[in-house]
Length: 349
Length: 157
Image (cartoon, rainbow over all chains, first blue to last red; front, side, top):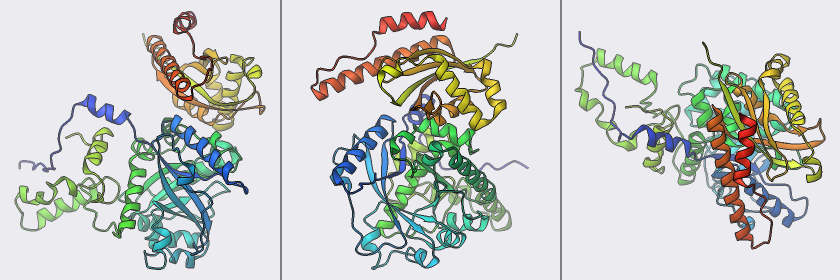
């Protein structure tokens, strides 16, 4: 019996050289750069923020998210110390606004269940909203129900992870389109924190072994606990090596942790602000082996449609889904997505 | 005959927190000791023993700004050394704070030299641009490329 070939949608072919050039011209993100502490003086904070941005642009980053950290749920009287407008010159970087919320109680996580009239005014000011859970209950609540946040942080900057990572929680987080984040700043500064970072990464790898589609991982500098946070910043290529060698991540995951995965987080933030849901249940998963298997299985059981009709919906480039996670956001530029997928060597059609 | 494969790493000191009088006196022994100590702290005694003979400091320039170093290592241990350079935070014990960044990684002497020359040229262009932008009468701290190529020829061959 002749083998039937799966017809996948065709993409414009590019030469290998162009694909390599695109891959090497990376578009790097650092999604967590804390605002330096002002200690009462706004001008000093602005100067130290400018130094940080200068250092990041020298290290070949392109997009940076300046982070503000709060504890518990944000109140309406939430006031900013300094903002991006005060900083002024960003040294050619794209600067995003990010909010980190340290949550200990499940009731605080409930504030982020969805965008409502109560929290829209505060949350929609930020490009990225992240939750930093401090115990097992807040972690499982953040994974399953915090639809108004894009990132869940596995914080090892102050000590060991205070909870165990479970496959059900990771699956729930992936289903709603959340990403997981590790901070390397404290690991560079202190050897004990480095140990905690490696422990967290290994437990994450073990817990995510059976999770499909695979969780989105982001690597950022984060809080380092030292006075001069510019000293712990490292270049993206060195961090890719750290992710592969020391933390044990896959080659593809390591390369995308500061590029396409971070871009996905930004797109999720855009969707949140535009009012679109983060539900991943409609992921077509063109490149997911599970989906391919079920499609092949269904083809055998049911009346076979013609091969061209089966992929009629996917001939349109906009409906192609990214590997490992949710569908392409309609707000994202398709050309850039296609370029990235080709540049990372993922598509060889 | 199986050929031994090497890698030439060009690394730049991004932040060297000490006066220039002290940093200009640092030698290749200080740098190598810092790398092996950091490797031992992070990857254990076995990994640092593997680097003992395999890692050599081919060229060190602590007088220009920013300072840079050229290392030679085995191809098999490149990942460990690169990770060690990322984790390196101090020189001379805990006295001098620093951070290193790997600028390029090349597989032969010839390509290593070309990469080093390209790196220096870019630095000179950047420093010229900075001087022009700031309208300052700073002295050019870049190197004379012809002098550098002569030094590199002597050292790497």
